[in-house]
Image 1 (cartoon, rainbow, N blue to C red):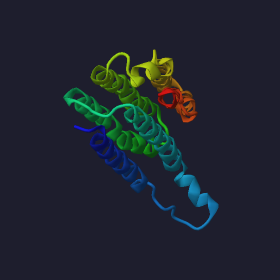
Image 2 (image 1 turned 90 degrees about the vertical axis):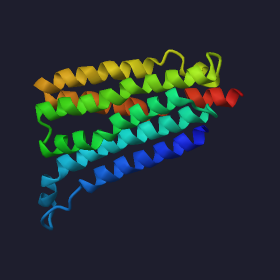
Image 3 (image 1 turned 60 degrees about the horizontal axis):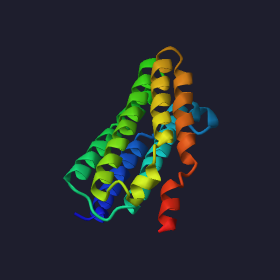
Image 4 (image 1 turned 180 degrees about the vertical axis):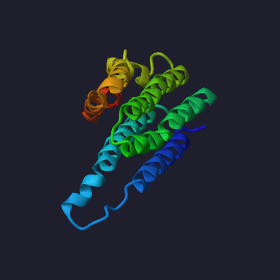
Length: 192
């Protein structure tokens, strides 16, 4: 199967995930700025989750720019990643509805941790198809940023139980770390 078909499918799933999240944004009741105070948790949770979906979409796009073909293992690793990402609207909704209570903050962290753990599974499956000397293998390297992200998510989950705002700070910090473009793949592609 071509990588293009898998990319198109994944793009569609990610678009649906964003659509589900945006449908949770409700119009405030009232016509002054105080009406916004009731919806700020929903908006803030949506923005953070939207950024995360954008990060995954961008990195997914770059990842598949390195490959031309995929096999069954890559298909299932990609489905695994999309499954965990599809739970983000649920975690986002609970996070906002609870106004950032401890258990929903920790659960949100779990919803971020699961795709972060799925990502290297997908990458390894793709490298097995492309080979250890492929552009992708050279670009990914040891992936210290990915490993650090997992540690920070765990830190956010644990701290989220006792201090939800600290947990959220961990999650926002990881997002900011990934919003800065990762040029490893682009640099490796430019060499060829």
